[in-house]
Length: 105
Image 1: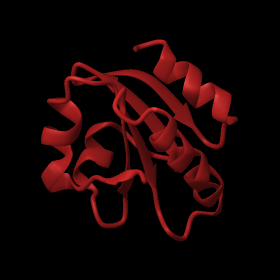
Image 2 (image 1 turned 60 degrees about the vertical axis):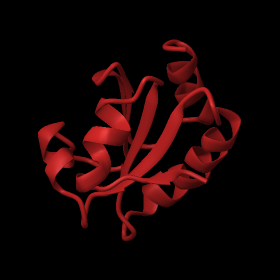
Image 3 (image 1 turned 30 degrees about the vertical axis):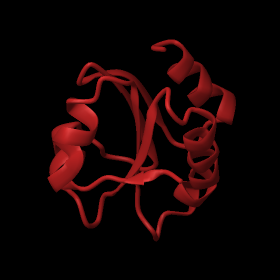
């Protein structure tokens, strides 16, 4: 199950993580987000223990969405050592996200 990340937990969970972190910025009303959601859930299971996989609801948590310039959703960011190393905007195949995680493992 993908971790629910909030503005309050973002710094601890994402920026201070010793593992790569995948963050899906999404919203409940967003159709394409519903297509990416199951992929994110699969990745959270497949990379359990190797990477942190989480989701940020941009309607409820706008601070970090604004900080990282999230203008379109879904946007999936991959962080390593607190820095963005990959950005996917829109819906991509699962392999694109998996390759981005594998590149930083």
